[in-house]
Image 1 (cartoon, rainbow, N blue to C red):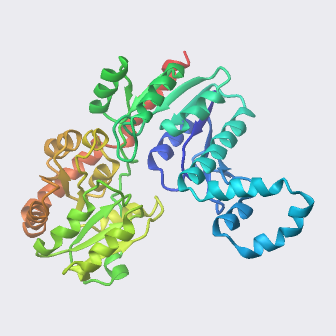
Image 2 (image 1 turned 90 degrees about the vertical axis):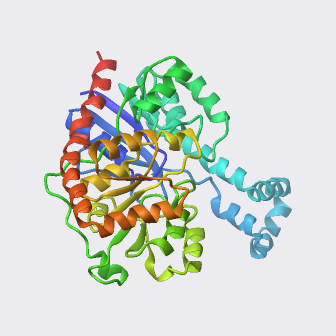
Image 3 (image 1 turned 180 degrees about the horizontal axis):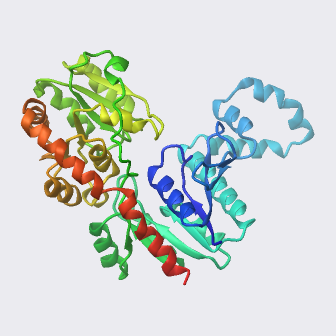
Length: 412
């Protein structure tokens, strides 16, 4: 049995793509160990029902409680340490240095990540694997340093050279590390073209399609959960509440939407700002938020929607080239979409006729599309019918063989 060491830089509580990959590989007879992060509330070692093993790594620096008190300048800590300073005066400059370092958010972030990388690498090196699988650039060093002769698969979920919040250093780092990689995978053909133009090698394409279930998800009683009438259309955005996803435009569109309640399901960095914007809206009574829900519960929320939003803004090539799993999750739940006019999204929405494309920078254009789907029963029902066919086409059962082909190729 071939052994796989897989790495992901999150707690693996809501990572649908990694779950699908681990499940497919386990079902194909591979032994899979998934190394991920621990936030302190999850088991360190866990056996997933799909057959793979989850090993969660703590990235908390040593003496974290001391560092936290230093950062907060707790006077009790300083008083308690006075006697220690007399016995060990060399501690004084050490604590001063730690104090200065902890005042920097960047340094704290680097400190935590450094310990996470080192511990993840050390944990993986205790075992022997045939293949190391790195999900995204932030786990590729761990895969390389712990490989010990194993083949390396680089599974790039994002465009590292042109994405929000990242500088040019990401691209240089990726270019350097690719020399150690045996096979690269990207999410779609647009990204594969881009990767080939940068590095001269065509990667494998593995689309981010959801699991296929013959039965359509049963709608959750979301209306009751958020306190609205049962016949009120739900206008749903599900996923990360992050920059560049057009979420502010959805709130700005609500004064032009004649019927429906806007619902956000998820968490993220800009959620507080988005909630503040919603509170200032004249339509604030029609805007609701629900925290991130477990993956196995999400389809029931999706199925309760009348319209699903995928309104990525074209602010970087990573967004421009995105397919986005939520587009396919909406289709799997028979929900028509209002979506960005970007190449990969346009290809699916136009080809399958499952929604309307809009200028996502225009709240009025978004509202026009929403009103059209909500108010034109014939149009909406026709879109729902077409999603029934599309969900049979864009699903993991049809896609997973591309992953298994990569593994068969590199283990010949």
